[in-house]
Image 1 (cartoon, rainbow, N blue to C red):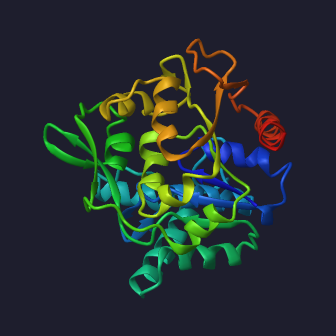
Image 2: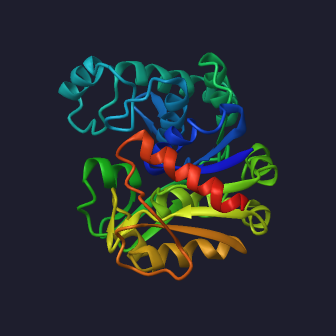
Length: 301
């Protein structure tokens, strides 16, 4: 079994290619829940949903969020009365969010709800929220703390920030299922997701570092030079005190394992000694497949 740490769009793109080489039962995915939000009567777990929809075959792979072919009739009506409804949610997508919210209110854990959804879609991979406890990513602005969704979706990252923080402050325990997925894995793969808001919440869960430290970890840099492939990773890396390039990502991740295999893009002018150079711009599933094939070659030889 191979375990992936996933958030945002980077790791899901890699998973799309990995599924051409690995069988779904051989894959476990520990998913970031730091960007979860209760929103207009439903509970959005965006990174969990992206992975679930990918394995279900219904993900909108043009945007890498939401359901392919979904409509937004509900959002259009809601936004007429609630102009501050800043997240455009598809109608089918909203149905799952409402269902999740009701199940959570009824006492189910996020892990249990995710398992219910996976059974509904006949998903044989293991999709595992990092924790069953709220630990929500915020950014600190001159006006106070702001939910990451508001910072990135509503304000498009144009708000000055001085820190990345979480509510509540104390990090949660990782689920037993997530820790088992680390222990049982042949190796761990961290795709080119945002290190700060997609991956660090997973690594910060209690129990993860102690379980991960002796495992082989493959990590793919999300940077080419000082530019992230997508998203606000550059500003966020600088905010937490790391260089906004591949050297910063390497320094961040090497704290969590004694066996780090680091991958950079072939176009990256930044030099990380000993890194593996590959084409990491996953514009097609074939590129992602080739990356996964190279990962297997390097880790098993």
